[in-house]
Image: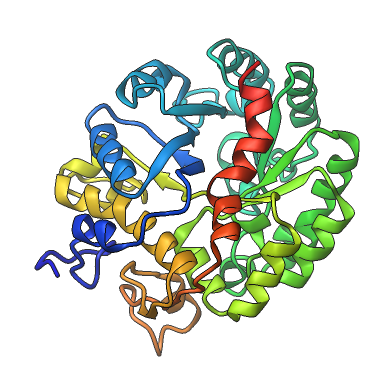
Amino acid sequence: MSTRTNSSNRLGIDYGRAATELAEPPVRIIDVHAHLGGEEAIAIYRDVARLFGVSLTYSMTPLEEVTMIRDALEGRVRFTAVPNYWAEENRAYHMGDGYVERIERYHELGSRMVKFWAAPRGRDYADEFADGDPDFMRLDAPHRIRAMEAARDLGMVFMTHVADPDTWFRTRYTDVARYGTKREQYEPLEALLERFDQPWIAAHMGGWPEDLEFLTGLLQRHENLYLDTSATKWMVRELSRHSRAELLEFLTRFSGRVLFGSDIVTADEHLRTTSTDNEMDAKAASRDEAFDLYAGRYWAMRTLLETEHDGVSPIADPDLAMVDPDRYAEDDAPALVGKALPAQILRSVYHDAAHDLLEPYFSR
């Protein structure tokens, strides 16, 4: 144990030592969902990835940092095209029709995957930069269809984020007239899965790890749909609640269609104390805390999938207090119940599903 504790390491785990105590994974791990940036932070991530057996990462890196991140990781990274979220001016253009040009530039740098983010809170962002157009961030908005057509013509895989946790629909999204129900989030996705027949990866277990029955129907209806396991806090909280038998049956039934992802975000702001309103930048304030932030995600996911661990997660989960403030504090955490999945399932989730799906695209 370590004496160091923070929101990513409530239990004072020595993640470096803990990585060596995990059994050797049955295959090298491919992480299909990360957000890597920061010239200093990436060096810490590189060490963390090696410790936890991650050999290749697909990252939503700002276009301007792609070359730097690729060099820092010695090529063990590939890139998913994303809009210029960081633009200080004319964000409607960058999130709208300007995305087509950016997709083309990512493609020139070797990217063969493109992200379309369409979470319910996109309606709030539209208030800020799209003259209040409530449909600006809908997955099927006209400017997004144009970007999808451009990406399709370039031969790219689609990734999307269409729904948020059930905890958010119980708290942040109670205005159904504004945000819609959770099930309604999937209506544009299902229509677009029929219109664009290339592979789609729905991030965060399709946005509904709470409901494996719903995901089963979604995957049965759309053979071009895949899921990733990203959003570690969310996955730990909700996948721990399923029995091992339920999760194993699901992963066996859809072997090859569930890919490992972490949703790790790296940034140089994590290495120092700064005054910031950015929630992601505030998650760490030193090199040690940055290490725990990145390592804790891999430790938690591998522990969940590989072991029989039955305890409390080391990562604080504010969603608990958001739903039940009388019972939970902001820094409390849910149970982490390991599923001890068999080697053949781990091989598929960790490596084979991603390799078989993405290698034909990125090797072109």
